[in-house]
Amino acid sequence: MTLLGTPDASRFRLMAVLDREWFDGRTPGSLAASLIEGGATVIQYRDKVSGVREMIEIADILRKTTADAGVPLIVNDRLDVALASGADGIHVGWTDMPADRIRRIAPDLCVGFSVSSVEEFEAAPDADYYGVGACFPTGTKTVERIPGPGLLTELRPRTTRPLVAIGGIHSGNAGEAIRSGADGIAAVSAFLGEKDIRKAVRAVKAAIEGGVR
Image 1 (cartoon, rainbow, N blue to C red):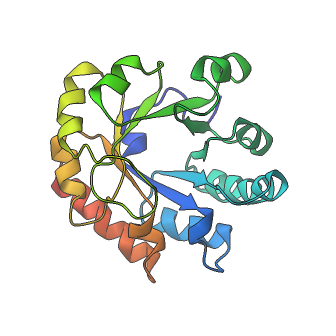
Image 2 (image 1 turned 180 degrees about the vertical axis):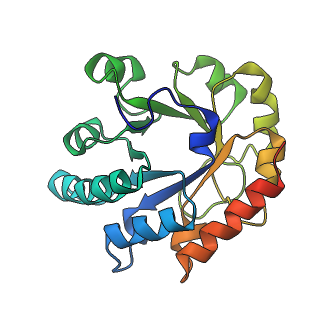
Image 3 (image 1 turned 90 degrees about the vertical axis):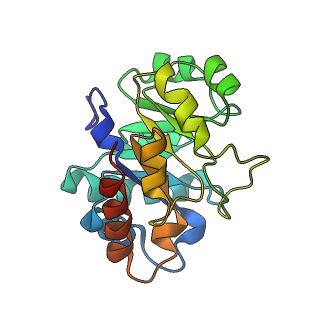
């Protein structure tokens, strides 16, 4: 079994997304270590620019760092990279490998799925957790519409699975996302865009704790 085992909401309280385009000359191991030291409860590796060999090399480094700390590693989009690195989970969307195929190939992997409306959620495959958003304006990913934190409020009564707020999350609005119905948050720039990553993660963690429903 993976580190996530049967996922519960507490595991997704603070998901730090390690986006390859935000490394800025820093090593993946040092970034992951700083995020974990700051309080990240799960690391997600997202990479839209590297070739598969480089992705596996990076994922291997992240796997060692996260495993040593007892923190789960989730790979965005790529089942091959997740399996090759021994990651704990995979996060996919509508254009990626279907969730039922993933479960057939890798039944022990935690599967996350992105939704941006009630209609998408109702049509979505069964997942271990759902990424919900964009909750706020974001510059790290192109989105056609911003449903806002109200979507979390609409989805909360519809599922007992963890809901992770995504899109434009930072210390100033993380509490609002939690109060709106999220079990946790996921962020990129709020962490990797700051010089002191540990301090940035702690600030978001404090906002989450202050927004506990």
